[in-house]
Image 1 (cartoon, helix red, strand yellow):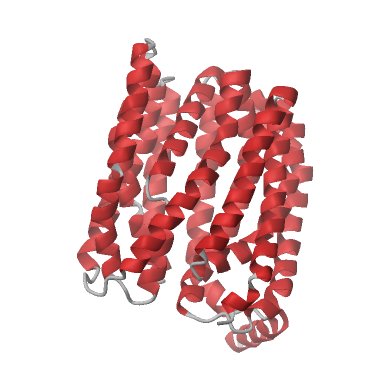
Image 2 (cartoon, helix red, strand yellow):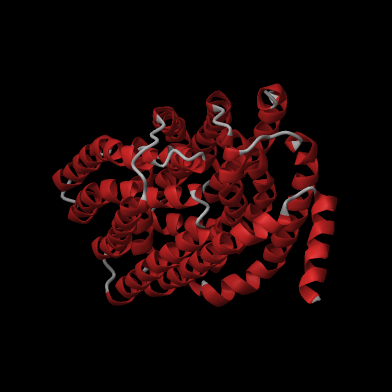
Length: 418
């Protein structure tokens, strides 16, 4: 009886909101569970960084991870999206095909990171030199390994993905927390974080490759993944250039404060990925007939949810930060201001549609516009206003992305209805 009532209530809500809630509750449960687990683990790791590491050491470590992320833009970062779509359409052999292709391509990361390591060794900075040498070896394998995520998403096997993800996150978080507690050393931190992640990524990839059918290869998806990767280069640079500039202009301590000021809002922003991860394979395999009519309704519903989440964080953040980040209380006003940019996260709706339908030109226009705005803003505002300038540039980029995503999709409405 209760089950029937719940089902009828969901049917009513679906008719009202024009959203397939049953699908998202079923598929989204495992994604949400995994993401919430990751959020909790990330919070624990952040607590370890904030309470166990000297501010200077964490600032240097953040510089290393940010630089590593920028270097990662030379890998095929868009391949996972393409593999998800190919597998969702029954082209499972594309998964196998992409692995060899990525391994060859990622040699570029090894060469660049290795060269950067050589530069720091010449400068007698052995810590940074060793860190980037380790990353040159680990990251090419790790980036290829995480393709298992795309494969499982394409199969809509969110339960297995969740289990694999939870094991990886748990092991990596534990290793990183222990490294932060016992060693105030950036090299050990890099090994604990990136090394453990790489081991599990490769393990899950191996298990998935044994299962996957090698037939039905879609070479167009490989090409699409390559084009998406080209598009992601500028956006990745834009996303992490603020950390690099803050480090060089304001110092490691300021970078540490800036990192924690943006950490919690960006973690909450990541929850919107639940929607994208669940919707992408379904949109990729289906049609968009009637989709546009419901975009305003879906956007408004999502805005209410995110607005409530933002309000809670805005008013609760002073207490939360004083409790869990006692050494970083000066970041409170910065974090409160930045949390308002969470409202721009509703652009996950048009972004997911562009990705699902492989609108390469539209995706490029979207990422190029937002990235240029962010990079120019960072270069201008950080030297003038310091950390507040960096926050302003980041918020401006989010607002730009919100506006351009809807404009691009609606201006190209006919291309989705063909």
